[in-house]
Amino acid sequence: MATYNLLLLPGDGIGPEVMAEVKRIIEFLNKKGPNRFTYDEGLVGGSCYDAHQVSITDETMEKAKAADAVIFGAVGGPKWDKVPYEARPEAGLLRLRKDLALYANLRPAVTYPALADASALKRELVEGLDIMILRELTGGVYFGEPKTITDLGNGQKRAVDTQVYDTYEIERISRVAFELARKRRNKVTSMEKHNVMKTGVLWKEVVQQTHDREFKDVTLEHQLADSGGMQLVKNPKQFDVIVTDNLFGDLLSDIAAMLTGSLGMLASASLGEVDPKTQKRKALYEPVHGSAPDIAGKGVANPIAMIASFGMALRYSFDMGKEADMIDQAIAATLGKGLRTGDIASAGMKTVGTEEMGSAIIEELEKLAA
Ligand SMILES: NC(=O)c1ccc[n+]([C@@H]2O[C@H](COP(=O)([O-])OP(=O)(O)OC[C@H]3O[C@@H](n4cnc5c(N)ncnc54)[C@H](O)[C@@H]3O)[C@@H](O)[C@H]2O)c1
Ligand SMILES: CC(C)[C@H](C(=O)O)[C@@H](O)C(=O)O
Ligand SMILES: [Mg+2]
Image (tube, rainbow, N blue to C red; front, side):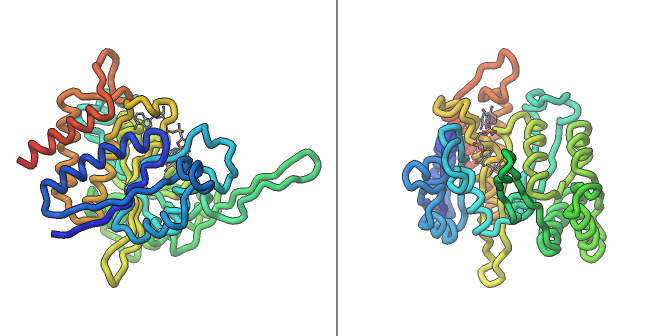
């Protein structure tokens, strides 16, 4: 038996609403045993800005570094559109990713059988889909310098963002991709734009070299990221693991979300390097969706992405694969019974709210544990 300490950062908008359902799952797991979870909570994003005029405090950063895992809701919203750029809600999330060195962002897109009709695509294209988008998370244009807006003095301004990748950054994310593929269907598709970008040239070269040196047994394909996006919609089941940079990964994972039915379904894990001394790695788990200002406060958000993200924490941080599988099965069973939040309901279907969906999943978990 072990005790694990979590830091919960619910954030803004629907973040706290979906996090409430994770707290109930934690309660369930603590009852079931053998492992125990304790947790601390903190402010992040706009709610932190309102209290402290920053999007995350140094004190919360220290707690994040000390925690066994961070569980993150969502940040942002129109209320904070006018706050200084450095203090915008999203900056808190970016600081967490950068300062905890969470370079590997796993975004699995799995279409549950009951939801094959909820996708915007035809059933046969998405039925049985199970792909993994691996997004590089601490480099690229998100963090490259310079990042500026300069007044040119002639009534014009110039905005600059910088895309930077070093060999080691591409190498380590490639290794994660190949290792993931070995446990799946043994195929990696790397996406970049080497026809336009120098970072794309280096990306392709380093992924290929890492493959040839260490992972010859894995099938590797390269695809330009724009046509890759097209292929993701045309024939998504051709993919197994897609490895790509920070910005392309952001775009491609939102596209993949719609293959599963809704952004409210897509979970993610952001992982750092394994510490050779402790064998532990820093990790943050969050749904791919945002704070959904259009539905916040109504109790109608889909909690599945958040719950499945906690399931990924069980799998990747706590070696609780059996419990993680149980969460996936409970979600599948709940959907199989016909429960739908608004985002995944087909026309004419009755919908349930966030809490009701959470209760139904816990009911299924109780059955599975009995
Ligand atoms: N990780 C994060 O915290 C994160 C991620 C993406 C966007 N954001 C921020 O969120 C704010 C809103 O961004 P956006 O509107 O582009 O993206 P969004 O993901 O918040 O919402 C996009 C659409 O999907 C729907 N949606 C998202 N999650 C849902 C859920 N769980 N259940 C039901 N419907 C759901 C929303 O209602 C909306 O119509 C912005 O400030 C953005 O920066 C934060
Ligand atoms: C909120 C924002 C900073 C974030 C990103 O762009 O990485 C989000 O869109 C995501 O996909 O996690
Ligand atoms: Mg995004």
